[in-house]
Amino acid sequence: MSNVTLRIGGRDYMVACAAGEEDHVIGLGQQIDAKIQSMGGVAHSETRQLLFAALLLADELHEKGGAAPSTPTGDADQYADALEAFAERLEACAQALEG
Image 1 (cartoon, rainbow, N blue to C red):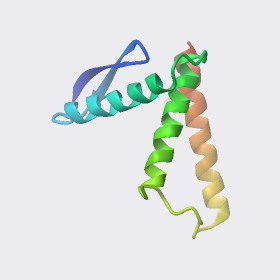
Image 2: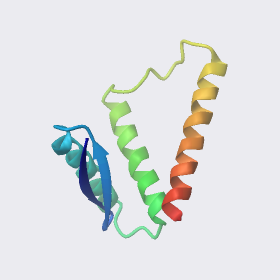
Image 3: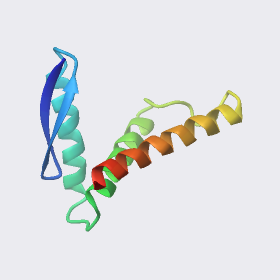
Image 4: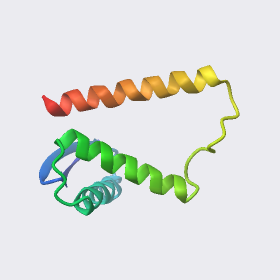
């Protein structure tokens, strides 16, 4: 395990990663920071900035065909459960970042 420091939105974050993945993780952090910088001086909390940056990056990935198909092929309840779990994780992250 390795640790890298990412500077995102003017703040430093220590992130653990697998040995040999440091450059990749740093590059991902730089993409997130660039997305936040491209949003300009939007007066949002740090949590909202990170959320918007993640959403914009996810949308770009989706547009490039790197995301799941837009038409679900499985059970709707399964997708609803997965989305609910994801929303809970996002909320936990937001609470942790807000202190």
